[in-house]
Image (cartoon, rainbow, N blue to C red; front, side, top):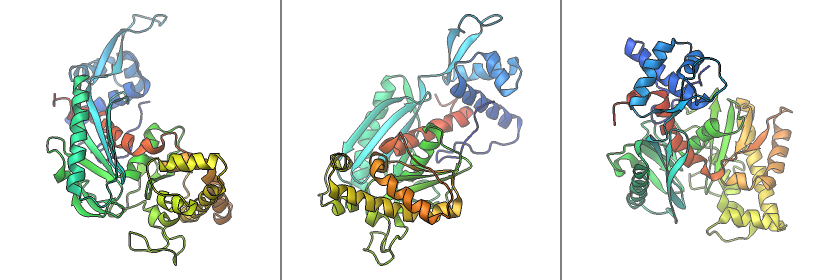
Amino acid sequence: MTAPLHEANPTGAGRALPDTQQGMRRRNLARVMHTVSAEGPLSRAAVATHIGLTRAAVSTLVDELVRAGLLEELGPERPGRVGRPGSALAVSGNGPAGIGAEIGVDHLAVCAVDLRGDVRARAVRQGTNRDRGPEPVAAELTALLRQVVAEAEQQGLWPAGLAVAVPGLVARDGRTVVRAPNLDWRDTDLAALLPPELPPAVDNEANFGGLAELWLGEATPADFLHVSAEIGIGAAVVVDGRLLRGTRGFAGELGHVPVRPDGPACACGGRGCLEQYAGEEAVLRAAGLQPGENRVELLAERAENGDEDVRRALRGAGEALGIALTGTVNLLDPGSVVLGGALAALAPWLLPSIQDELSRRTAGRTCPVTVSRLGSEGPLLGAAHSVVRGVLDDPGAVAGRR
């Protein structure tokens, strides 16, 4: 069977195609692309067997995808197969690429991912974006974007689209940052500030992290809660292989769930939010350390070396995380909780407290807590791969663009 078409992502991947002859052709093109992407290299005959179409029909579809530069022929299949060998097909290493970008509180990052899922170009700028207006941040991001696109084009790639991860609430229009407390941005039309030749799909960084886990993670169930952290803490709720977005697209704001209602004030306007106990800066304060570069590495190194103040701060953060996660686990009954972002590197010292709180507060139900192998790369990779998924889900839409 061909790979399923997953959640409709911000680039439009997975959107319903019209039930017409043209719509059927585009759906079949997508089935071929997903099959070769998931199972390839494959011959035309093998693709036909996988998706249940005639060899003649598949050959016509494959020819179109090869002409568009989305598939390539590698030559005769390996020897030892019965019958006349066919030409093995693979997803092209050239052609369309997904451009992903991330605006973090203390960094900017851009990467280009080809249709095979390989990162082909990358650029990062370290430095705080806190208390900077959207315009200068967008200008710096634009410079990084042009650098990555130029490097990708030198390798025979061209940008199929751009997706941008941000640490804040994003409207359903996929372009407006409604509120990013840790950047102090409100009602910002980010798309209007980025290059018009590459219109972006903007989404919350935790959502892109969750999609990366869905597409690239190891043995992740179809229902899970992905929790990621930088300065703030966000979550993506994935149900039946799709993001749960909520009415306004704001689902997953775990960092602003109050764990102690009479606690310290938060940038969101509330009090006692999870971020005030388990965000990076909160953990540093509790450990008696000053904010600076390589914060997570510093915490992990100190904890590994037995620094009891750091270990105590991480136990407290894990306890707060466990309390905040309890409500979501009780309400949604996910298959697992996945720790990503900075939390992944600190998991050895967070997990015991998180699991203790969940065990005590979830009526004995088991909800495994695992650690993402993607770590802090999740949001950036999820953004780039969302564009790639858009090409796989509707290759007919990009076939005539180059």
